[in-house]
Length: 444
Image 1 (spheres, rainbow, N blue to C red):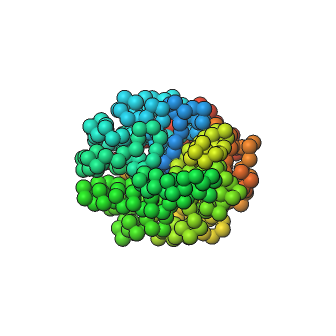
Image 2 (tube, helix red, strand yellow; image 1 turned 180 degrees about the vertical axis):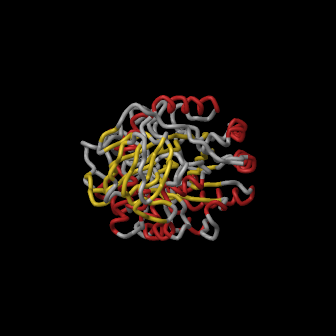
Image 3 (tube, helix red, strand yellow; image 1 turned 90 degrees about the horizontal axis):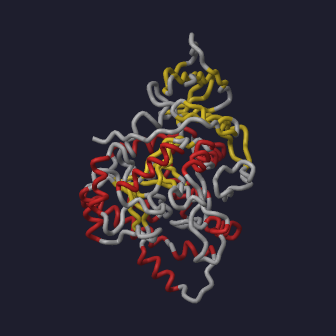
């Protein structure tokens, strides 16, 4: 494989930003220094004026394979991921069939081994009646990212509302449990109150409201406290839920962690008027009062990770009426550029951004040798140009669904992406011929 020497880049890692050289040799970060010279063949890349970041680790995506590949698949969405600086992803089990058995889960790994350009892992799915199958994951805790529980309305038969099942899995799981938290009872009650009303996109945060999120998140936290479970709650959207989390411990010591998604940091309910069902997602984008509190909680470490919940649907599937319009947004190609726009605006430092999108996922999920720019680590790296914007449009969107809720936005540019030391994206072009690796986890 090729070796690379990146010269004079602003290297962002471990809370610092320094102009340095970085040598990539045989897939790993061989050396980091102010000036590096070598006596063997390397491809030199001029990083002057660019920032070198650890590759983004996205802990929540839906790549739709198997069974829903008209929307997206592991090949197409991993291409979009690396084009946006995402070098590793963790994918959800609500494909078709749902990944509710170890055999079905391993089938997804086999597909990714053949097709994925980025590094990959897959969550084990949970239903009301597969607790014993789920708990087999304990024997695989160093090779699977975690268990996913939909504690709210979801796809297929993956809603888990059986108290015995929840208690058993929370008590006996030795791996991280990730939860989608929305109360099915609250959602149904809200829908009943609107019976006879012609529903619009603006009704979505009324139906999937603050109470639905808080009630379900509190249940998950209560179960985790009761059983000392390693719990990670996905896509927090409300100010009310923030009271359930703490910033009083280092991330590595937390038993209960949380994430916020880029679209909940960017959009508010006022955007339904212009964007309509394009921004319909679960949990819903909510009233503007939540956005500054989500930002504050992110910056003070109450919220731990920034992710996407990338969920592509075709244009036809996003059309109303309300019940027909599918929930989910394609975002994995644009999450890092969108957040880099916030760096340029002064909302977040680039060091904090790297912490939340690269370091924290690695620490939270105990991913070994990734998520940082350190000598000896695997070379998952991204070069970005904060001074050059690229406008999101049909010509450069790589999602199989072919659209983005961010079309028309001018965002900072990803220029190079390396996965395991291989250059897989350069100046707008995917470089074919290499594949990502299955993520490994350091869990005792």
